[in-house]
Image 1 (cartoon, rainbow, N blue to C red):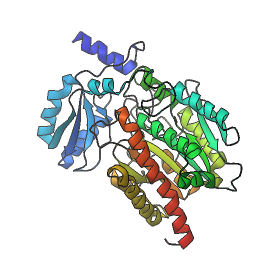
Image 2 (cartoon, protein in one colour):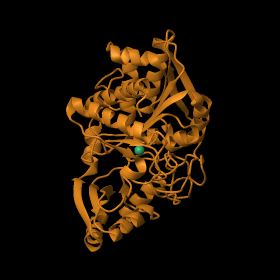
Image 3 (cartoon, rainbow, N blue to C red):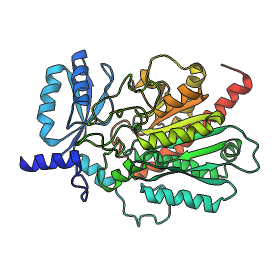
Image 4 (cartoon, helix red, strand yellow):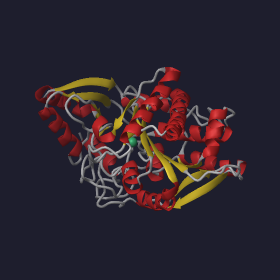
Length: 419
Ligand SMILES: [Zn+2]
């Protein structure tokens, strides 16, 4: 028992910084609530202080599954609860640590920057600097200061000197630290825009100015590599015991109205006030400076295989919903063509769960940017956040097909004036 208490304290306060958190015996469950009482029970678990249940997705309405990682000493308790209130429980992972171990590949696996393993923050940043050095006429390095731990958020601007463009596209990923597949995919897309010999891609690259920020939450991402693979939030200490706020619930647009928590110990803690998280605040200031040029804002998350439309704070639809929904369907169709991967399309609020204070809500709400989407990449919960490295390239390839289609279809709509 003493060991368990010490281990929990270690998890909560991260006094065990020198060692990686292990998830031996932790199981990933898919819980599907069958009754309103079951939904309420799940909400209470999610919102509870010092909850030892780690939510991999948020609670939705009756019938919508929630993925929750359960520690070994809570397994019988959770089964009793499921039976009592009416929750279907399915084990997705018998032992989460096995999946973490399977994900790791030695740094010598590929020595350059490739897409056969996941990269650390310093490897990604070094690669961005190298892009600037390799394509000095096209790539500008952007350094946005600074995060809570004093890190620079690194991005690149891609603009071909021959192109006569005014509209720009902004891409962000890994605002949630543990969603490693997202920065792997966006660096792949960025690389293709710079190097592809496919004319559809190279022509698209020249049509817009591109902003790529592969790691939006570098403090959290670094921590997910060094210490806790399942870390999601920032690293700002908001309470004595619990660190971090959810950086995708912290943006100043209808902040806190739905799908967030005011408890610092939860995964969806919105922070004490809008833009309390320095990484969100500095990026919002940067985006504000380029917002009048923005054609599109695309954010990348994992997992669930969804292409989502704002808003997350309300069920009300955005002004150009019909157009963006139809383009989304075409984009999801294009994604499925390569490997048959199925995506659903819809608003955040209606398709998954209410979630206020996200960066896409803020961009759409504040600036009315025409194209705003959020990808939830692979998979459907078999691996969840721990997508095996051999899936990085297929995921990136199909996502690129879909990404290109967004712009192609938008242009077609504009040209034909179809709404
Ligand atoms: Zn996310």
